[in-house]
Image (cartoon, rainbow, N blue to C red):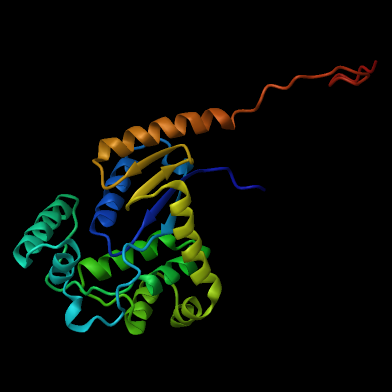
Amino acid sequence: MQAPQKMKVEVWSDIMCPFCYIGKRHYEAALEQFAHKDDIELVWKSFQLDPSTEEDAGDKANVYAYLAKRKGLSLAESEKMHAQVAQMAEQAGLDYDFDHTYMTNSFKAHRLIQLAKTKGLGDAAEEALFKAYFTEGENVSDMEALKTIALSIGLDAGDVALALSEEQYAAAVEQDVLEAQQIGVQGVPFFVFDRKYAISGAQPVPAFTQTLEQAHQEWSSKQQSPSLQVQQGPSCDIDGNCD
């Protein structure tokens, strides 16, 4: 039996983006109160905010120093900005520990996400990686850290090795990034509803609720049986009358 069709919500995200985790929580809150949530299929898409970031950043892994250098800010200004983001995260029920966040390259983490998606664990992988990065201070490009994350969501250590050795998962990351460029993604999180509507950024819950309702209403109307234009010819009806 063919599985019922679902409306896709695609999310371009980087697990090192603080607003992506907040946006995930806002979307989830909206979905929880959405009457037709069983009709929705969530698809995570890879995006890298800074592909040039080193995996083993050492002393340069401090997020305050990283943002200060990248944005031309003072260290105090960077710390203030991060404190404001942490407060926003707290309002969404999240605990950000920027003092221990480890700046690194997210490409390996995205490869793991791509493999997890093939096993129906894409959302679980995103959640675990967000938590590892923002709350637990893990280096999400470290092999042992990725193994621990994989095990926590139902994968095994061999899956991590597979994700990091099979080029199809690297190609899937690159395809998502290319697709983001093609549809004009300027920043993340970027939520796309049925390829018709989009939400950019960690907008408030009502924005997600409204967009879900509008996109689903239009999607649902397309699922109705189409009216057929019938050309009549010799046939038999359900009562067995033939002419």
